[in-house]
Length: 95
Ligand SMILES: [Zn+2]
Image 1 (cartoon, rainbow, N blue to C red):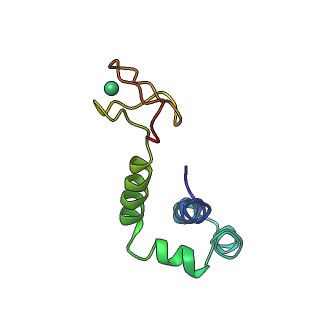
Image 2 (image 1 turned 135 degrees about the vertical axis):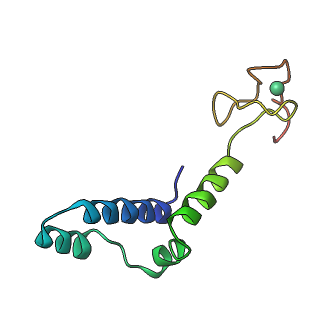
């Protein structure tokens, strides 16, 4: 799940895309002033560009996925302790 700051950064990118497609200057100005989050935390997330933001966010999300410790198959839920692919279970361990 995206963090609050990642959600705001994502929204900034979407609003910038809408601004680029909008043909009305007044609406573009409204988007710039009302919908772009200019907090330093968001600016820092997007400072290396949208592609870097997407890659680092996807890597963070990928690291949080619940995978079987034995075979690496993606589990059905985040709290699952039984592999959907192999007979391995890990109910009694922290992982
Ligand atoms: Zn497995």
